[in-house]
Image 1 (cartoon, rainbow, N blue to C red):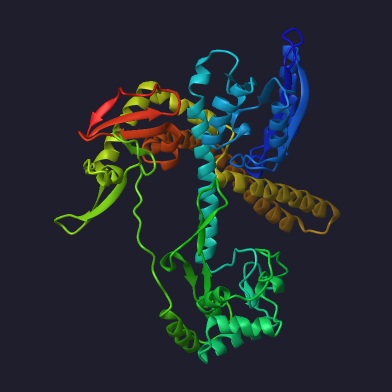
Image 2 (tube, helix red, strand yellow):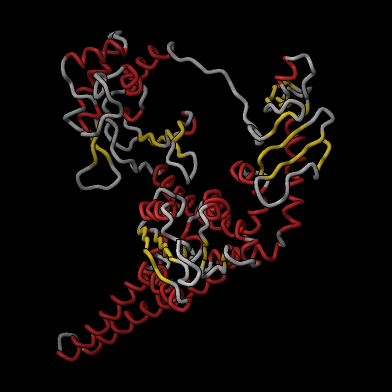
Length: 520
């Protein structure tokens, strides 16, 4: 580490995602670097390294340049990390808070967010509300994810294929985007599989037959890498055959939405029940007829099984027995109306004959939520939160404006070129005066109308950005005590005793309680 006389060695961290590119040139890599270098020059410090992640989302912390910067920090080469604003460091409030509150202080690294006024090396009011600013950045990333998901969902409902590769037996249409057609190289194998199943052969027998004949599996046929290693890799399996025999895509129906991502921060996907799939009939030619498909489905129906049911609740994994310290579970009981009610119990105390807890889960959850909201409203004033929301959105414009304004500008430019060409054709005699006057007047009217539309979009964007900021600030309070991830970030644990008193232990910020307590 450098000495105090020489000044800190600074690492400039710059990030630009695809969403940021549409926000204008001020977010470009070059402009970010120029801004940071000028600040370092005025301070009389030295830049050790510039770390640039171009085209990486702020919710992904596995960025290559970011990982290199961490390696340099752990090697003791950097004293200070400097970014343009907090969202450049990241848009995941949990991980951003980890680096600000734990990682940087543990490695004795100072962090400065230039435009936000955050400086961990000095005491300031901006540092106190940094967690809330990080949450607003996270909410912005979440909104972008929702808008992208909405566009994809709309395409699915219209029967457009939005996946990477079509199901085995189909290929992309050679000229039409988002449409699939039968692949005559694989379609005969699909028809044969259905015929074999209709003849009474099991999925295992069909897989063994295809492997014995050397028929390429779907992964091999598509040129995909093996999902697993070993002698069974890249071979037909009974699970693959069973999945194909139940796939309605072969009936000419577009079936999508079988799985969804856990969240916008994770690449992990969860399988969805069939009732939540998006199925659009008549989008492509079928490979099997409905009668064959239904008869095969009846043969497979007896092999289905269900798993035992589990119950989920907001405080799962966060609430513990005050007596023994074990996590609390739930029991499901019917009420007088026939509905299901969950009760929190301590199975460890029950097993030891000490008597278990028995409180309604919804009542305990509401009591915890009320305590958190009361405490946070004491720490953060609503007007401060609204101001931070406006700062977080100041660099962003409405998606409609982002998409429409460049198109409008190009169309206005094209019409200006037409006006010049009409004038030139009139001077050269190619157009009669009355024709040129009529064309010129009509083209100018269209150009002026587009210019007024573009200006209205810009004004609307400024007005609606304020409304969007107020909405984000309001959502903070709505989601504060209902968001599972946020509760996990705020609370280390909640303890419930036999009298129904709650004790909340926070991860950071407020001191660990016995105060506040609340009786359920």
